[in-house]
Length: 181
Image (cartoon, rainbow, N blue to C red; front, side, top):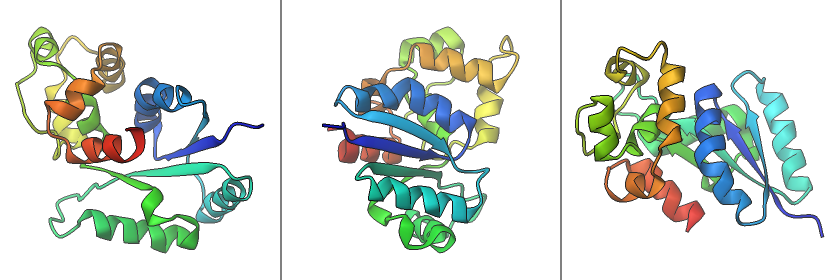
């Protein structure tokens, strides 16, 4: 019997790097084949067609997007899901959407243990819910040549158990509880 596949619709390369390093192995351990799909560069009709095919072949999917309020404090997770629904129509079910709060960089920082924060000379924090790309970039130690290099280093010693139990990132904890437990 063909194993049930999971298609992970991801916005960009930072999301894909995180997904491949941290989340994909967890789904593969459940016996699923996992296929990341970067949708940001696709037109909506391409995404809709791919989602239709995924469903027709009895696979499942998760559709990741950042909350990305960009200063709009009225934007909530429900409104973000509605925006995605407007763009992709009935093809994306709200129950299959994963809204990352604020941006994926918060999920990266959530998995840095206290010891690694000291080693990297990062400030101690208890919440990464409001981390933006800009806030993340401002924290990168000077000896890293780019945010990509820093992200790769973070993932080498990432602690998912720390991220979901010690550091408050409500969207990561919710995702873990809903899809991985």
